[in-house]
Figure 1: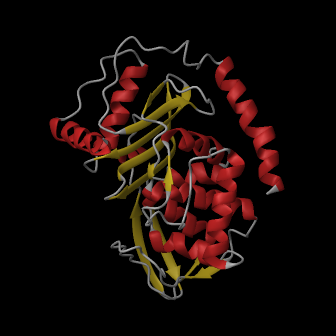
Figure 2 (figure 1 turned 180 degrees about the vertical axis):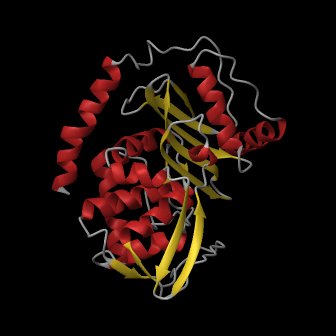
Length: 300
């Protein structure tokens, strides 16, 4: 954890200062039009800034589904465990009543780096669980490390109960997740794996191959420079997305929580992009807007 404390002092603060010097403060980037989003909860900020350009119920505590996997990757890298060490795929001990199919065969030998690759780019739950199960002390110790890291980062409204995001008791806020986004962005390996568009995985023990595709289609879109990405979904959480993208030459962090429809967060990202460029952002589709209204109504 000492390494991580040093990173906070030496990494995040200069990043914040750089963003502010570049003019990405909320005051200088004030938009002249409204931003309609399908996501119920949202926070948009210059990467590393604690001044959102836009926020929407950003302090509501809600389930975060597979966005959890960014914290899992952070804890793995902070642990210093060798990424080239080969681990054996087992079975998830608790799926919290969720359907969690995996094409990985129990007994397959995979190194940590490739497990992280599958976890981040395609949200592979069994790969993620294997990372945690092979942490010193196993899954309970790993989850404790996740919560300790969240506390160290100042994510005061965040709690983890499992490493995959299958548990709806993994909770946070859009504002807290901006902090996590800035922290994981410090690691090039997390950035690179999270935005890899696709990967063919070849296993030797036993011998078979699997093709994986990134759950965020914008990572394969030449019109976007996606710098960090993670999607998530549970029925309790709706569709979720954390993404950092270069917009007008600067990295912008976007946290979008709870929308309906596989591509709905992608539609929100398009609206955010246009809004940041002072272009008409466009309207939210009727079905997505109705879903958001129903979720908001249920809070009352």
